[in-house]
Amino acid sequence: MEYFRTERLVVLPFKEGDAEALLDYFEKPRVNCFMDEQLNSPEEAKAEVLKRSTDRSQYAVCLPDDTLIGNLFAYPERDEDTFSVGWNINPKYEGKGLAFEAAKGLLEYLFTKRNARRIYGYVEEDNIRSQNLCKRLGMRPEGTFVEYISFVKNPDGTPKYENTMQFAILRREWEAQKAS
Image 1 (cartoon, helix red, strand yellow):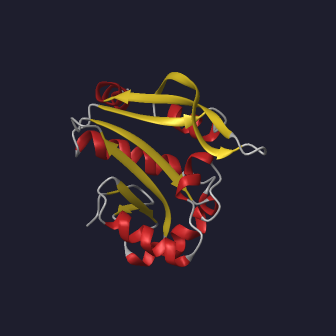
Image 2 (cartoon, one colour):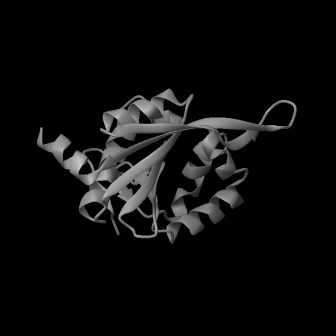
């Protein structure tokens, strides 16, 4: 089953063969928000891929040859017209516009196939690349949560709290942007 395609990518459910590629970029997450998803062994990666393969909120981002290069997620809110989204691309594939292409495809998919009304995402204040991606997608900043959440520890062992920005876009904003 295929969720959607873009010019250079195919977005699919996770499959067993994705474990090695998932481990490749989750062994050392570069962004703190993914530290709780860190994988430490091929066995952990296999278990994680199995879990993601049945989770409709998880999307495998692949090249046309089926190579996993990243993942997307879209968590529906209770009324299922609002989604919290995010993306993670293997650093080996950065700098080619693939994250933008995948994220844009995800927003299009959610608005047209899942009937989303509102899509939002959280971005750590120091993750400038992801903030810029949100802006390129037409998402607007809605605010910053000061010391909102902790994913890692300070050198003294206390939680390091992250300032976290929220970006969002409504379907009508997405449609107006596409029409212009």
